[in-house]
Length: 375
Image (cartoon, rainbow, N blue to C red; front, side, top):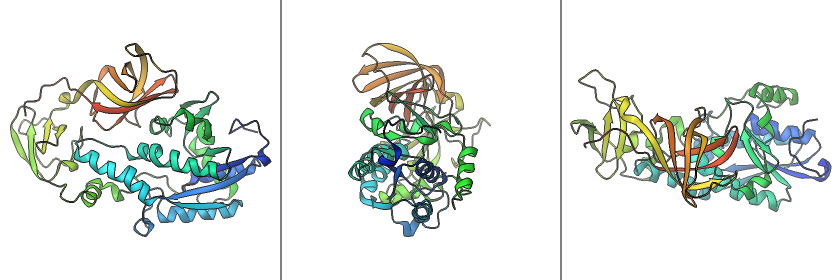
């Protein structure tokens, strides 16, 4: 039988708390651990008003998802609790999300949620309930050490979203699905007869209906849609916009302008001080390096001033790319790409790897460009 938890205690005498989102992954996680004889308890977080979210089909932690988690818990015969973290979630995740866009950044709220809510408050509750570990349905492999490694199913790998997990948290966390491919998880769901076996995967940010993040920012920060100029990198004004929050670095579609040279235009930079959106050709997006803050280490920490060859990801969907990592202070670093990257934005994360092991990562504060901007 597969050892999902790397625990030496007898399953029947070991309480495992499972974070249940209502999706197929966390539901199968709970069912597998129950099948192995563990004393399983399910916890679900209510993160925002589920009266608003109940009809949302492709987002997590909505009203329907809470109902689904409760139904699965009843079906497999485990206790289930719903925790109200609305105010905590709004303060720690949603407010920062809005402010980040106003600063001209591209935030990643899912990492913030893991860092500030799930692996803090939920982990504390799991301990209070007598849990030996907190298990989740994330696709990432936990290895003794403890260490984090990329999932076997690289198309589902979620290591990018978990770089900010602390070593202390990691010792209490487990990820039973890290060694499986998605079709296998679906097969387990069907084997258990779970009602969520065919449920679609989450795709949207949970509190952003239909991907319209600008509307969410406007609701959280009234007046955020301040108009301004759309400026070419050569300094020429090409048009006007209705708010910088409608634009992200690397964006091509929906700019509301056309190129008089026939060359496609991309968002090169967002200037919140001048309320400007800077556009130019794709080659102007070339970024040779990034500067990071709040660097978190899960592997062996690099000495300050030393340079190490690593693999990095600056967005979740990309394959790791070669780069050179230098720790400039205890929590700051510089990453120089072997080849320039395109569409890099402050506010994103940069995650370091040694092979498939997650070494750590940090938040991008600067992404200098090779191209001169005259605006």
